Length: 477
Image (cartoon, rainbow, N blue to C red; front, side, top):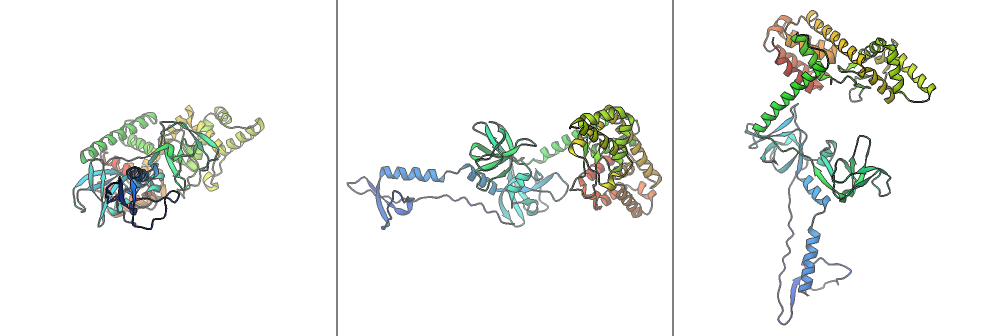
């Protein structure tokens, strides 16, 4: 990792001037003048004479050539920045008063956000952000490739300063227009041309292109570090928002039953699985285990997704077929073929997961129409009730869990990955030598959470695991 050394070079031209008697002329060292081949002769002597008017021109020329361009100002600012990152699952990186591990915390900076780096002090960086100045461990700040990180995180914006601009499809001047960027509007920057004369912006999800750098102000988005009091107030507000969102999801989905265990698990899984009734997507490439479609407010996957859509379709076949038909395009004959094919896919018994079934964009629109219908949402609520009840039963009957905290944690794991949930729970029982001791021990929930965090599959979803753990801790035993 390269060291950042802040060097501010101030070019000071020392002019030794002597007024020649009888002449309004000044002797100036030739090193003080930037020569121009078109109007200056090659100088053989170390000095020559110029008049006062020429001195003014030289001074003006010097000032003009030391003024930074927009790109130079941007590069200078980037040079002094680093991007913080947390080695754990925490949302903030701590800023210490002194470059010592046990030093007092004086500020908190959001993870993956830029911060000004003043200097390196052994294995620490001295940093400044807002009204906070302090130290951050060297391995918690990236100082190389800062521009790439800011672009990836969309932490730079182009503010259109002059007038509406055409967005070009190519960085070349002759690139065709793909849209307009409007004066006084801001757009995320996603790239620069090699010479920085053009900046690439993302206007919408589908419109991206190039505009001249000279017509924009480059704005680097950053969050000022928080003091301890500000950080604590922020955490309290975030917890209030989380609880309100859980309640909203619960109110929009399965009605409260009065059973604390069931209602908590229902709201917990709905929160972790997005709570969006119209959700539908094919397998994501970043999750190698995903082979097929995921649907619904509780994110049913594979054959569970297939069974849910079949159940929705069969609950009102006439309306379902009409919804599918309205979602597909093409001639009457082509549309009819598409409708029959999709209906057959939904109602047949062959395994989507084994076949790695995926849907086209058009088919996904039809699937979302089914999921978002009145009867589609009602079936999802009913299916979720049945599934949650079944998982509670597995926790109680198979693993003899009686502690509500452990049952809720198990159900959320089981919803995500049954095989790993079983292995983690068995490991926790083995740790305490029996399910009875696991239920009674005050550290039972902590132990099962720690085992889950080390799991090669569920441990990758540390945010979900930590959130589930925080909710389960608040439940009564």
